[in-house]
Length: 476
Image 1: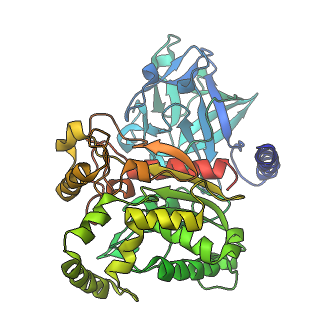
Image 2: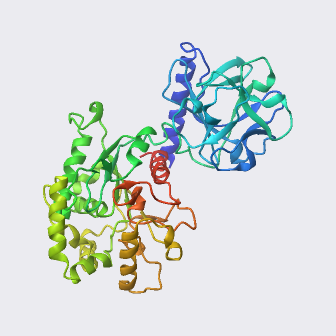
Image 3: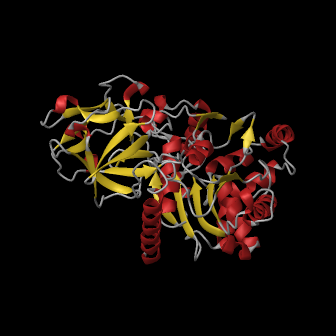
């Protein structure tokens, strides 16, 4: 933690020096990324999300400063230059200050809204001296204005043609926010090491034009992350896939590789593995322990580290010959090099998983590698809101096969009790209550089979943004 804090101080100093130099070259105001309160000159009140709301389209107002997170804004420089533009991100909601509806009219309301990268969420800071500046919306050229120069709490903040009034003059004052840097901004996911997304069984990185992780890779890239897919087989054995993942990591970390963007010395990767992707990773590190030096962190999502009753049932039900035939067709269509239903699913049987854990001896994680895990779970009391009927059916079968049917069951493929690895971060993290929980596909932003989204109550891209932003904050 001391090293991370030191890196933050060095980064802040470097940014500050860069800003000082930039003011001589750029017509505008340069501000180091960080949390600020923004007070308006005429009233001394602070830019605030009304009523502390976390909802999209909640109005921005002025209010006497009380130190609440709804009055703290992460000011972050975007990729725009000459002049620089910034986003204003609420510490409470992680949503950004937005001119409602991208309006270019005077008196258009300022609201908070989820990040979309549009110019009505980007602002030019115009230095007007004495510590004050105007905040000019890039799309309209109009500035943030306390409507009618009211001095009362909850007066609306709007955009308006730039004038001379003190109700358009804002001062930033650095504050210590009780939360880390937000996962919303354009560089919030710009981790030290790239992200390697490892898929599970059945599908490859891309199938019929759909990514295994739905909208997640594109969303992470829009926040500054460098993201790769594993390129391993959909129906390969642990050993086969371990070899393929090793090859992929060496490609990514080799500056001379064509897979390496710009020949960078990336050094290590942050692995996020779903389902069997987590098992393949552990097999790789068992077979090739020297690869530990190439991995900064491992995050597993709904991985059957202790096996699953569903795999036991697939073998015990005499369906194996039919499933193997179907899988061979799937593997051929997807371009698998090594399609083997039995070899791919055997490690997920509970007895086999126990044997592998005795061999791998890594359920607690790896020394020198951040190891963490998440689980998903269908909420049996509200399953009607789960759109994936197939996983509801398999979840019911698994519930009847579980040692204790009275326990919370599973995500339709993996028991929640099977998922913990390293530091267990929780089940259904980020899922709104009353929406039926989360399925095995849902945690990868796929509500039904290959289709992204369709996960009521769960924002897949936001969930992964938080995971990756936390990796960045921790220095990974």
